[in-house]
Length: 85
Image (cartoon, rainbow, N blue to C red; front, top):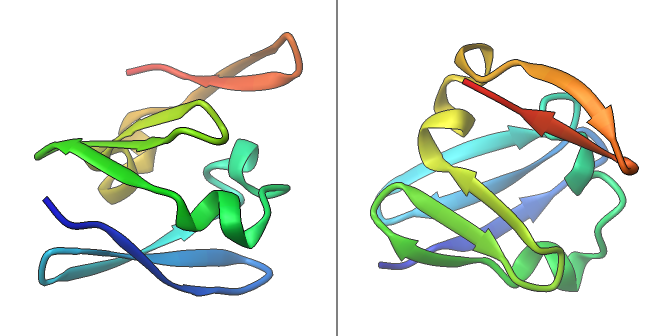
């Protein structure tokens, strides 16, 4: 399953997942904001609805990118945000 970062700006980055391209806003995913281009670009798609950034040790459901309001940020512990459903 292919995944590719196609563009990075100050506010978000774009992921190409098959034939779907989606914006990933840093405001919704703050733990990705300080990542380098190399770290963001190193994204794996181990399953249909799962993305993994090994250099950042970040796992995300693709559904959480499509509908971030359904997965609100509820706490910040140990220096990172936790998103729960």
